[in-house]
Length: 130
Image (cartoon, rainbow, N blue to C red; front, side, top):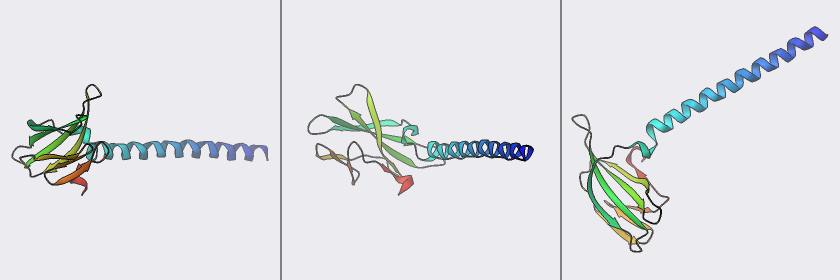
């Protein structure tokens, strides 16, 4: 009975370690997919188009156009600048097949970019996930 108990304990340890390893691999793959396809902080910088500040001056939305070369069309990236927090920026708008950006603030926390209304700072628009 003692030898059999030791084998069972050893099997439990091996399966636990194997399970933890598999969970780590799955978590790494999920993070890799997020990083490659969903992370808006990895967008290309682009060339500056225009910028508009919110009515209260708390935010500024800067628009940039990116050229993917011969294989892809132009895209517009909207970067929200937090004016009250030094150097804090966040990409909130990314749309394909656009070369211009029309930016209008409807109130202190709502901006419309090329017809897409966003509540800042939490809402984002990414054409890849529509």
